[in-house]
Structures are given as C-alpha cells and as structure tokens.
Image (cartoon, rainbow, N blue to C red; front, side):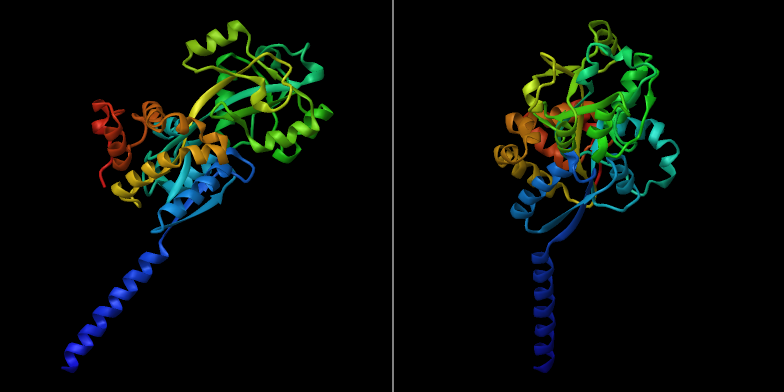
Length: 340
C-alpha cells in the first residue's frame, strides 16, 4: 500500500513539474539590430503579440550592434532566433565579405522561417548642397556615411556605389550624431532608408531634426546600370519620410528581411506562429508600419522572401507547411526544406 502511495506521489510530482515547466514557457532569445533600428523596434512589437498568443514561449528581444552580429551569434549558438536579410545569406553562402572564413565557427546552420518586410536603402545630402551634388557619381571623393559597419544597409549601398564605380570615402559615425555631423559639414552624405516602403528608420527621424537633408537619387543612367547589375530599384513618395526631401520621389534599393528561428522551434510551432502573425497583421501594421506588407498579403511576403533566399539557406519546414497551405509554394523548393 505504501509503495503504491509513493509511486502515485512521484507521478503527481512529475506531472506537476511538467505542468509548471510548460506554463513557464520555453525561452527564445531573438537578436536584432541596436535600439533605434528598424529591426529592434519591429521585433519588440512582434514579440508582444507572440508572447500573448503563444504562452508556451517567452521571447526576449536582444539588441546587438548590427544584423550581421545576430546571424553570426545564432550560428555560434548564442541565440535561438535572429534578424537576417537575404544579403547576409548571400555572403554566408558564398563564404565572402563579412562571412569570409566564418563557416568553421558555425555550430547551427541559419534557417529562414519568417519574412517580415523589405528595407529600402538610399542616400541623402545636405539641402544646401543639392544643386552641387546631383547624382551618385558626384559623391566621388566625398565623405559618405553609408551606415554603421555591421549594418546590411551599409553593405547594400557600398555594393551599389561599387557597381557604379563611385570611389567615395566611407566615414563611420555614431547614429546619434548623424544629423549634427551632416549639418556641420563633417560628412557630405548619409544613408537613408525605410521599411516596407512605409516608414523611415527611427534614428533618421531624430537626425532630421538636426539637419535639413535632400534625397539624392541616382541619375537615369545610373539607375539603368544598377538594374543591369541585378539591383532592384523602387520609388517612394517623399511623404513617407514625414518631411521635405526636396525631391518629387525618392529612389531606393530594396532587399528582404526576416526574423528567423531554426531547429529549436518545431515545425508545428513555426506554422502556428505564422498563422498568428497573419491573424494579427493589421494590428501589427498599426503598431509599426514596417508590417504593412504582411498586412497586405502575408503569404505573398513569404513567397517573395523565399524567392530571394531559397538557394542560400534552408527553409524551415514550418514555413514550407504554411506556404503550401496558402498556395504560394513552388515545388522546386522541396529540396531546400530543412530536416528537423
């Protein structure tokens, strides 16, 4: 009798422990860019929704100096999720640039699991110089801040300037001083960018208070050359920047961004998270306009993101399941799906 009581007590204790552990949730540390960046702001908003809707997880948002640090940190096992772009995936897959020689340090291969938005990168000069610096080639020899060293936006713009053979002088400065340094003339041009063609990055809004900048669009010839070298070019209305850009339109170079997890999160949970994001897309877009593209069409955004990176990193099976259900899957991607 005593033996049966002891067995029953042990079973109840284990059940109680499991219930407690489940109710506490599984910790997911998801890394982003620094505070004041597009990725950090967006992930804070997204984490609030997922923490509410998926109580079996506890998502913590961890800022880092730049998105390249999040991809590398995840690959080395420091995080359970990360903020990554198709541009970073290109460098990782090619073992080049910021990822040259990095493969030896990889403990877990980055996967793609959720594409959130595009980021569109461009350039601006001080308004007083808009008649002197009229196209990107005029930046030759000029002091240009294309973004902090770890930022993928910097890489996107540096690649574009190299494609146009513009030999500028890169200047590294703190984001908090961008406006004042442009105003003082310490730098001649700065990066500007939006997310989802809808909202400027938070630090740029602050910089706009310190300096009157004018968008610098590539010339028609430069734009054609960029397109011939496989750069996508989009044009947004000046109103997106919530200030006078001194142009009728702003030409920007978009690329894809997402918040991704890997083997730590099962297929069904990634699938569930994607359905939750879709259900809450309108509310997410209301809190942060970066999510307007998924509010317009969550399945289409996943399709566009996977198209950009299918040959670069494996596709999480949860994302594949979601896309098949939504009718946006291409069978040619079947071989790209990761095994759990």
